[in-house]
Image (cartoon, rainbow, N blue to C red):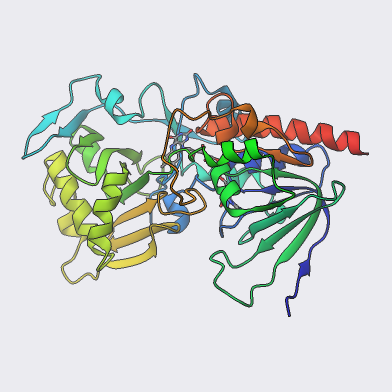
Length: 417
Ligand SMILES: Cc1cc2nc3c(=O)[nH]c(=O)nc-3n(C[C@H](O)[C@H](O)[C@H](O)COP(=O)(O)OP(=O)(O)OC[C@H]3O[C@@H](n4cnc5c(N)ncnc54)[C@H](O)[C@@H]3O)c2cc1C
C-alpha cells in the first residue's frame, strides 16, 4: 500500500535551506506569512558547511562559501551586521609560499599572495564558520530536514501539492511520500539540480527548463581540505599560511581559523581541491580513507618546507595512536583524526544536491541571472545564487536573489486574497 502522509497547509513552502532559502523564510515570516522550509539534507546551510558542524574537534573552517568582500557586497555586509556576527579579515601578513615542481619552492613576492590565493581584495570571513549565518536566520520550527522534493503539482494554482521523500537516496522501498500543501513555492536551490530531479506538473516552460539545465552550479567542481593543529605553527614562523601548489591535490592553501580570540577552536589551514585534485584524492582514499591524513600532511611539509616537528606533529601524534576516519567526502566531509591533528575533505563535485550529474559541459559563458532563470511560473518562484543578476554564485547573490523572490511572493499573495 502506498501510504501518503499529509502535512498541514502553509502559505509558502521554500525548497532549500541554504542561504537564499533562509533569507526568504526570514523575510516572509516577518510579513506574517506561514513558511515551511524543506531540505533534502539532514542539516541546514547547503553550500555553507562548516567543518566544526561535522565534528566539534575541528576548527570552524568552511568547506563551502567562506569569503565576503564587504566593500562590493553590501547585502552580505548588512546581513552580518544585522545578525551581529563577528567577522575577521583574511590573514595575508607574513611569508607566502609557492611549490612549482621537482623540489622548487619559492617565496611569493610581497603583495602578490593576494592575487594567487583568491582571498585578497579585502576579503573577510565569519568567525566560527559561515554556516552560522544560515542557522541564525532560520527558526528551527519552520524547517523540515531530510525531505527530498520529487514532484510539484501546481495544476490547481490555489493549492500547490509538494511531494517529498524522506529517504534521500531513494533506496528504501517502504519510504512513503509526504505531501505538503501551500499557496506559493520558492525554489531556492541550484537550477540544474531542480530541473534534473523534480517533476513539475505541468512541465515548466521549455525555455526555462533549458536555461536551468544549462546553468552549472557555482563551484560544483570544487572541494576543500581543512587541517586543524594544536598550535598556529605558520604564524609562529612568520608565515601567512597562504601557499600555492602546482603538484599536490590541494591547489592553494590559506589560514581558515587562527584558533584564537573566538576565531575557531583550533588553528586551521584550508585549501581548494580542483577536479584534478579530486581525482588524485579518490585514488588515495579508495582502499582506506585514513590514507588521506598522511597524504595531506606530506604535501603540507613539501609546500611550506617545514618538518613534522615544526608543525607540532611529533609530540601530538603518538605512534600508538590509531588513525580514525569517519564520514564521507560526498556527504558532510571525510574526517581523519590522528592524535590532536585532524584532516578533513569535502567534495562538492560528488555531492548530488549541488552537482546534478549529467553530461552538460561546464560552460562559464552561460547566463547566470538571466531572465529565464529568474522568471516566476506562478505560483512557483525562483531564487538561489545562480539566479541573481549581480554577484551570482556568491553569498551576496544568494541574498540578492532572496530579496527579489520574497518581494515577488509577497505581491503575489497580496493579489490572491
Ligand atoms: C567550495 C566552495 C567555495 C565557495 N566560496 C565562496 C566564497 O568564498 N564566497 C562566496 O560568497 N561564495 C562562495 N561559494 C558559493 C556560496 O557557497 C553560495 O553562493 C551559496 O552558499 C549558495 O546558497 P543557495 O542558498 O543559493 O544554494 P545552496 O547553498 O546550494 O542551497 C540549496 C539547498 O537546496 C537543497 N536542495 C536541492 N534540491 C533539493 C530537493 N529536490 N529537495 C529538497 N532540498 C533540495 C540542497 O540540499 C541545499 O541545501 C562557494 C561555494 C563552494 C562550493
